Length: 170
Image 1: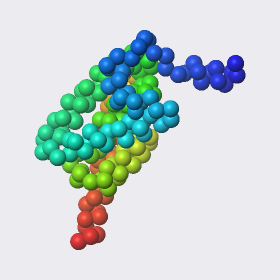
Image 2: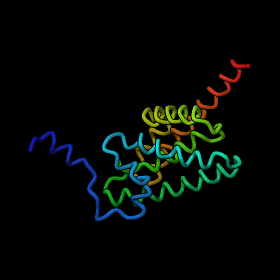
Image 3: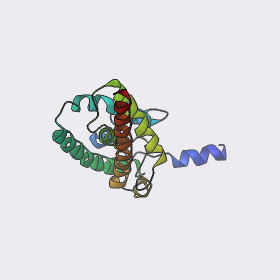
């Protein structure tokens, strides 16, 4: 076998048996099993959940997002053990919670969803501090919380952009 291919194959997560409910939750159903860009597919898969939660009063939305974040930590932990890699590429529930954080108090519109999607993906890839520090914590907490941190940056920019557009529009 080609040595370069062999090295790449060695880095792929190896499942420890069949995928159970924690693994499917962490993969956000089929999203995490996308052959390319599973994090992007995980974020896209978060949009219907946000759409369903967006009409909640702000307090309920935040409480639901915090509870979902705790669930994401647990699911990431269990799925990481299943894959043998703490932040295995099929684990995308962290993108789901990061997107929910990004969309806190955002208007329920496709423009907001698109803006939040783009901003969250940018900050998730760039990982400004403290997201970069949390990304180095190789357990379920680190896996989920680096995306929460990225979501907080995206949340701030989304709301600043919204306020700026409102100011320009009158």
